[in-house]
Image: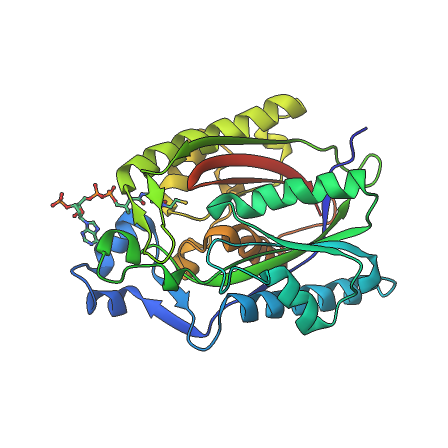
Length: 316
Ligand code: COA
């Protein structure tokens, strides 16, 4: 059996400042109704004082505290790797992962580095975590997804500034035990610097309709490919957590799985698209709301700039 990936604990850290649709109405020619209808977003959080490192540190501290509360035998010495998925870091180096290690005084004998895969960062990070847990025999991987996207959003471009927000989420991961869950995952890359791109020192630029079509196509294919590999139906899955990019994208996909629509979690209304942070923030919100039960099977699906997409089955 190829043991799957298990979530031990989750956490999130969000900037205090809310940027509402009404705030955006004062900044660009848009309106609340248009944004809600086209995206499902009502507000997003924006850094003011916080940044990608402070959010990562806060999410990491919270997830370690949650892990200790759940399992008093857990110690930080058991963490073999610390990865931060981000495409909006504050500095080229040291990595945000190294800064988290320093700020929290974590042990030195761990791998620590950042993963740049835009909105697919947390999915690829979970796949890397699994590979490390399997091959290096580590006990735990601390995986953080964190973004300070408001730095690279052009607040005069109404087609992008309404979508994105800042935030961080974290998960402590381990290998699932025998009979708990097998490992199923897939990943794809199709280099394209026209649909969604951010050059160094510039703002992000996006062809919205092209990205929309891409997203609705690949979420379904990543989900179906995983289910086919696992020999499962979506009915046997407890939750599907898609990257939170646009409510209309997820609504479009979930209609293909009649009777299972309620399994597709959504919280985009409150945070917008937080890129690599969106899946761990969603997982933590589900956890805080008591939606995650021990043994639940979750498929996480990501897609984004690259273009990249993929999915992974995890258990709790
Ligand atoms: N407020 C009001 N009007 C807006 C607007 C805004 N914030 N943004 C764009 N418009 C206008 C356009 O200018 C266009 O006007 P026109 O017809 O006069 O030219 C009209 O709305 C339709 O624009 P279009 O881009 O076709 O809208 P859309 O229905 O595709 O919605 C997005 C735009 C960006 C919401 C949508 O394409 C989308 O969500 N794409 C995916 C983006 C994404 O998920 N990116 C991240 C992936 S990880």
